[in-house]
Image (cartoon, rainbow, N blue to C red):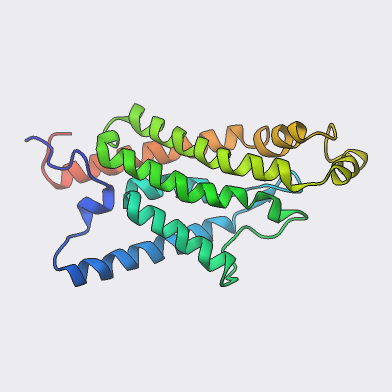
Length: 215
């Protein structure tokens, strides 16, 4: 049997659609629920440097597009930002010495979720290579917003103090980007990306089996 779900998201296939009112309620529940899950993933935080923690957030963000699609994933990340930024709910990573320096990544979460969802909606969800490519593009989006914010957040005086305190190798913004924004995260982000990509593939295998389609 030919696949009937070639260019859809995971929840777009699993969650039934009916009346506009019912659809709106389901969409709202999914958006808020996924924002809450992202907030829970932020509580798993480890600081290897004073500014940017290692958390489970990026894993959830990458899955958001595949699970929800571009619109719902983007809306979910916006709800997440509003909950933590405007309402002050404890959904962001636990505060480190310079936790605000990592807030640029939060803006990248919205863009990454939309990008991954957009690509998945166009059929990138069925090939492991394409899933990984879509999530790699999502990771690049997160870094595109996070690294400039991190680099520009600190004053020159603070950079000198970090070097004196042994937290930074050189009093330059490039050193901040590399040491605090890239070096500590390459391995972890790669593992999370692979976990998310393989998780998407396993989900589609299960869906096809449930629908009686050829795996």
